[in-house]
Each structure stands twice: as structure tokens, then as C-alpha cells.
Image 1: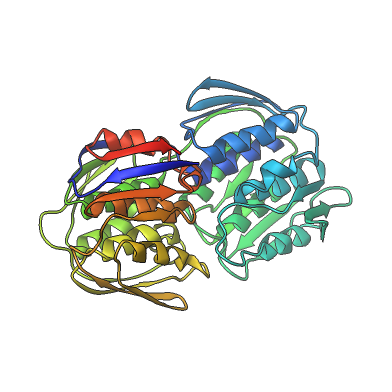
Image 2: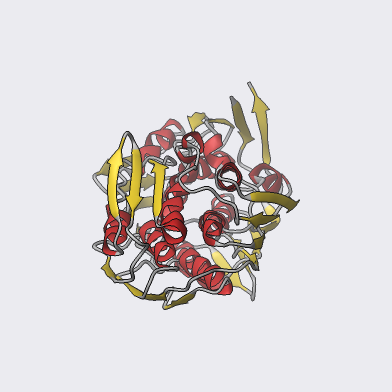
Length: 420
């Protein structure tokens, strides 16, 4: 029943160091299921989704040893197939990567239907289509997904009907040890797909084209252990970039890959913020008023859907009408009702939110973190608003942001966790 308590209205200043990418970490950790040997994974974010992934691996029979808070040693040699605990799987969306990894290594998999943030109907039909193209028979029974092959996975061509990050990674996992060659067309191109492919290649896989819309995987018989560091989290970086602009602050966001942030940087500059890029950092500041803009979310390299709530919050502080158009997920705008509690003027029509911004309009209130990124938006709103804000259901935020309270306190935020 913990809450986040914020006294807002203070400009933030200083440096924030970005942690490893959540979406890469969970995929790479569960990809360890395929590796018969010892891997050391570094730059892991200390967040609940990573901890649950490690718990899943441990419960399945892997040896998991924490080296530091952000690095772990994993030996999956004695993993037992079809043994991922239902209660853990149902707590995170990315647990569906167990399916692809188990299919690759054992030719069969049984996993409870995954959980995580609820954006309405989030089907895994593209995952299933890919598995079936690779020779698996897939069924859903008693809220479990069951995939079985006869004699293992067989390489083939897979065309994605829609661009799906999760399905791209899952099919790539399933194909790594397949007999023959697999080609994924209309693949997603996000940086964590590239990071997952780089990890697998370091383990002996033969994957080319990750980061483009055509990925080619030549199956290999075995994968060996490796030491690998997770890339920085572009969404965590983007969240703090928006926060700098929203609070009239100046923040140096370090340990980033600036190219991954280009779509976010461009929109912040368009709104009137200053963004200075260096080799592994971006510094964001604002001195004048914010201008209203239009943003539409797209798959990478477009503006990320995971930055929709944070950017919409910033739009609330711009004088005039802005529009946020959601081009990826249905029902992404559930967080709008929480912003309205703080005085925001927003109208939603299907996948378009029209924001009537006012730099002085947001005021502190009691709100909820509806999901992970909506929770981050509530933190931004609370720090930008006048008065006191309390945020409930903060477990969503803790799924994806390592030590967000400590990082913000170091740059001057009046923020703390309170236990009710």
C-alpha cells in the first residue's frame, strides 16, 4: 500500500544516470533458457520485472547468482521445460518469451497467459502465427498457451501482419536453434530487438538484419555462455528528458545512446526545450514557454508509444491546443482521467487526445498509476504541478524504473515513498 508523495513546482537540476533497458533485460534473461552454460548479464536494472524474470528462471531449475545489484550469473543447463510458475508468469507481459525460448531448446512449451500492463485487448496472434510457421502446433487450454513440435522447430519464412516487437523477439528466439533458415519479414526494429540479437549472436547464434524490417536466422545446434551488458533504457531517458522540460529544470541524462532518443529530442525542441547531445548523454533545459504540438506514436524509429503519457503531460503545460495521436495501442489513454484530477483539460476521441494546455493549470491531487508509463506521467505531473500530489498503485512504476525516488531526490525533487 505504499504511495509516492510529491510537493511540486520546483525546477530540477543535476545529472541522472540511466539504467539498463527493461525491455531488453527481460528478453535477454528469458533467452538464457536456451543457453546450456553460464552467462553473466551486466547493467541489469534493479526493477520488479527483472526480479520476476530471475525468479522464473530459478523456479525452472536455473542456477541464479547475484554478483552485484546490477549483474547476475545464470546457468540454465538443468532447466526443466514447461515449469514456469503460473503466478509469476501472470505478473508480467514479457513472460511470453518463455514460449519461444522453450520451443527452441525443447521443441515444446506450456506457459500461462501473460500479465503486465493492460491496454485493452493485446493479442499474441502474431507470436502464434510465427510459431505455427516454424512447425509448432499451438493451442490455448485452461488459460495456458501450449506449443508442441514434432522433432523440433523447422526454419521457414514468417511475414508479420502488423509490426510487433514482442512477436519479432519471440519468433527470433524460437528460430535460433531451428533446422534451416528462418526469415522474419515486416519485423519490428526497436533497439531492444537488436540488443537481444546481439546477445544471442555472442552466444553462438547466427542472426542478421536485426534493426531492419527483415531478420534472417540460420539455426545452430547449441548456444554457449557469455558475459553481456544490457543497453541503456531509452524510455527511462525520455521520461527524465520530459521531466526536465516540464519543471523548467536542467538535467544531464547520462549513460544513453542519443540516436535512440532522436524522435523524443525532436519533439522537445519543437515545443521550445533545449537539447544538447554528447557522446553518451543529453542535456535538456527550458527557459521560455512551451509551444503546443502534434505527436503521433509509431513503431521505432518513430515516436514511442511508451512515451505517450509522459509527453501528453508535458502538453498540458503548453499554452494552446496540442494533439496526441496513438498509433500503436488501443485504450492507451486511460491515464487521462488521472491527469484531469490534477486540472488538465483533455478530450479523447478514439485514438486522439486533444489537450488544451495552460502552464498554470496543473495542481496537486490524489491520483493512481494506471500502468507503468502512466505512473511515470503522474510523477512528471506531480513534480510540475503546484501543491501536494500522492500517487497510489506505485508497483506499476517499480516494474520499470530503477530507484526513481533516489534519482529524483538527487536532482532536487521533493519526493518520497510513504507507507500507509
